[in-house]
Length: 401
Image (tube, rainbow, N blue to C red):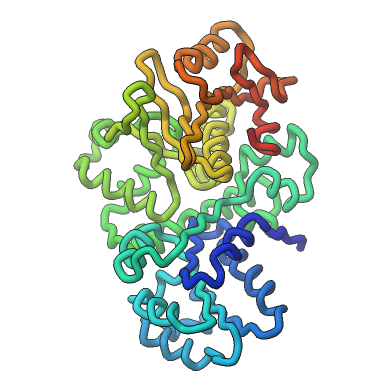
């Protein structure tokens, strides 16, 4: 089976090697974190003078490593003081109080530590509390569109884009193939595993029926402004009464497991973040489509918007939802140093009414930051309309902005 060397991620890892910094690869299960760790293992094992220790907590041979004491004992038996040691631990959150161990080994001479985790709280609490700022998070996403093409040996055409829109970028689809029934079964299995291990078990959730209903609701309303109060009202209409506090907790658990991403609203004129009515996007659009069911005909704009959001993250942007008095801007994107861009996402721009809606809101923003409309309008690759760049979706996913 062909493999992809995801060089951009390897480069990010290598940047922090040798700096006494714990490198944490994060993201949803099955997006390729373990694969990145194995690629790094292969890279460093081939260099003389290295001692690479690999612990994969999803393998039964490492079942005996249950807590930090077991981890200490195992690592002490493998450390070679005459060589440079690389400690690689996959799914480290399955080791109780792991942070006590890696805090100690981080200070050992000639030692680098790279870990993977499938829960954001692992970083915000365990790592931060114990080791402060001495770690670097590297977020691993599902396959990009260009990686999807390479992985499945596809040409860059409308048919391939359609498959990416429908099936998403889980690397494991290479083994499964791109037959829809097989794809959906695989995606359902992955989702159920993530939900069980990283949400239900980790947070001791009892109301599993509501959790499943909540995920389905988010899948149906991807890309829409959502509040806990609105969800509560909807659930009451379905004879399922839940508090807003419970809803907010469950949304946080889903976000911490990287199943969904919360995107805040940003008041463009007031330059402040709102504290309610956020948007949610799925980590993998294929899983979202499997949960929503049906074809993409009725929700194609939600799918396109989700893919644009994920691609903007790959390009290094911090993404919020823009709010104007006259309407909404899909994405306000910023980077350190004051860079900013505005983006509207549409399916097709085929008449003047649609053009005014998508381009008009951008024209209401009275600053000189770059503005883009991204759509699947036929024959559009890159055009400029009154200073606003109109990009074809395939062009954007292939070449960025």
